[in-house]
Amino acid sequence: MNKFMLNFHTFLFLITAFLVACTGESPDSSNEDSSTLPKSKAEINTNTEVKTVSISTRPFIYSVTLQGKIEAQFQSQVRFKQAGSITKLYVRNGQNIGTGQLLAELDKTELQLALAKAQNQVAARTADYQDKLLQQRIDLKDENEISKELRQSFRIGSGLADAEIALKEAQLKLEQATLKSPIAGIVADLEFKTYQYISPDKALCTVYSAGQLEVAGEVLESEIGQLRLGQKATVEAVTGTQTFEAVLQEINPLVNEKGLVKIRLRLLNPQGLLVGMNVQAQINVPRQETLVVPKEAVVIRSGKKVVFTVGDDGLAKWNYVETGLENQQEVEITKGLKTAQKVIISNNLQLAHDAPVKVL
Image 1 (cartoon, one colour):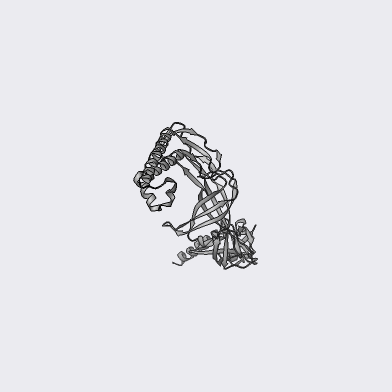
Image 2: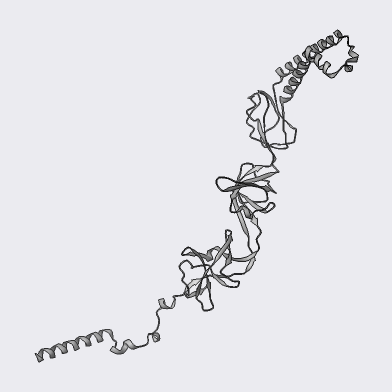
């Protein structure tokens, strides 16, 4: 039995010696201070590289953005008040015209005959009216000496009153066969040609004030409190890169079922724009001086807004913030930061509080 125990202890000793030889360490090497050992390259580059900006108090540029269409300040669908065939057409699409300028004429043959017939009826009924005066022994020269009521009774009885009304109607219809523009502007939507038939339910063309154009659009009801008449705006057509200046001219005091409010912008330099164009507009809203940071500085953690700053110790600091208005690039900070702090604007999505960072 003693011989067996001796052989077992010898076996354990040999195994221990073999393990020590493989590791190249002495049993006491585990007590050596690890801080004195050289660090690997991966351990040295653990700091997160970030970009920062220094924040300060300055005016914040806030813009209300909207989609809209170009409309004319003055626009009229011009149409005849009676049906007929177009015999003369004086304008074309794109033509600039003045107020009262001739646009087109209808065939007047039947209208002229109706006018002549009405004139003959007035002459005949005038003779009947005079006969009635003579029957009452009223001198025609003294007609105005009788009462107005009596004269009107004789005019109605003779048919003269109705004949004069018919004459005025014939004259009016003849005048309405000539169409004139009610406003100065540019001709558009002219689709009729000479000798075509046209009825009052069809507009001959549209005339609009090309030099007085507006942008009609809608903004969210939450933004309407920022808007005031006279605020400046910039307008850009969807199909181009040129920008146009405008001012806020009208706010409709009604919120529709979609939570939107209609507004109108007056264009100051509308050259090159056409009625019906789709545009995008930005209304510039003046704001007081405030703390402003780039939008990429604000991250959401657990449903709250957080901005990371860099402390003097080179560590990222977690700051809960409250924000105000924002535009496409920046956001107002109303609480949580101070001026001159260095705000982290990159690699901050997964950053932790007191994480070591390297400022680029």
